[in-house]
Image (spheres, helix red, strand yellow):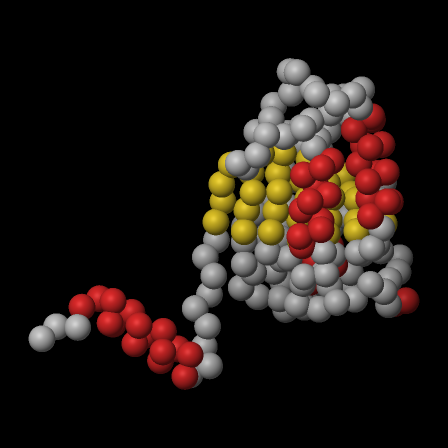
Length: 195
């Protein structure tokens, strides 16, 4: 009598459990299933002509080693992976941060907020700055030119990408993912990491 595929799958799971192994979670990516509540470039709510496309990704990192030099991440902005031993200062940044540093912040449970506005988005940037300052704990805001979307927020293993600024969606992402990294560290980087 054949036990079938279900039995084989069950035995594989039991064997992996007994060996102390885990089946790695799968990467998922989908359009957001929510209506975005966007602000326009003047900072006013209910933007009529904004692109409300957004994408929600789960990207389980497969490695978290300290490395020297650049890392070729599969996604930009990345949501975890290998990184430099030096993490970035928490808070609002005017200059674009390197992924190899802020990925380390993600490992520490940080949530990174991004904007990419080659044509300018001063009002939206000001609103995003205010949100990050109000949230405070384990947050970074950085300009980021290596992404296709105008705005994004990431944490270890998760990303939310959007072309219009929805502060409520970003705050909900923060609440769901802050301090959920493999480590929990709210301190600034070591002194020998400072420029």
